[in-house]
Image (cartoon, rainbow, N blue to C red; front, side, top):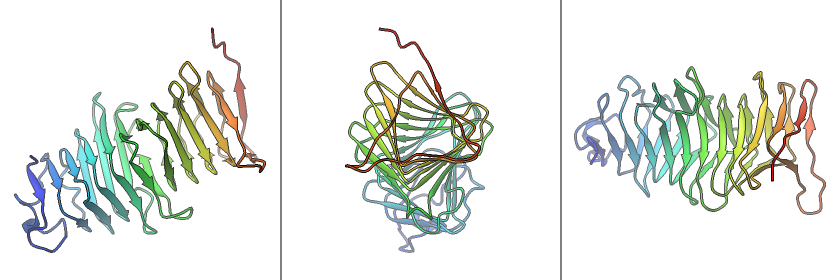
Length: 284
């Protein structure tokens, strides 16, 4: 049981009302649980919290100036995290990996800002958004109002996809991350912006489908496509590599352009961008 549970006991539906919690609003370091629909429209970041859970069939909405910060713990989204202008930040200060575990859904509205989900990592890959089930989803409001998942720490977090059946992630801006990793099945990113991210990694027989995405990268290493043995790969359809891209490197991996039905796919490599194919011995 969490230290305090939001049950909307005072029927106001808001995080800031202490009477809506079984033991008052969560204090610094305390664990918390959302068991009734809750709206956070207040800045709660002064109390950096412990582990949190949003129960199934329940929605936590972060709206306006609403901010919830968690450090050295995981947040599990079994229900819905609705991003409506507020911010959820997850911090790892050491070598332990901390996760926002998405078993339910993350949704975004037209009010999404530039920092909807913040990952703050002291070491690479030690914070992550973990898609842990095939029923999970992350869907923004549309092409003009993306959900922004950004790294704000000294190192870089990651997106870790552990779904066992194909899933689609739409209208999301991934910024400053170390890796997008597909581990067990296929993931499709539709109309997403992959910005200043180091690499995509596909495990055995896994596929990352980039559908009408923009890859914009200003790191010195470029955007690296990697795969494990036995044929994981990245597939790009109607994608744009914009002028901030240093390199798109295909090293020990496969990048495949593919059509939609009978239509010819297009990939734009704009001024200042480079596509680099690096020969690699794959072995037998």
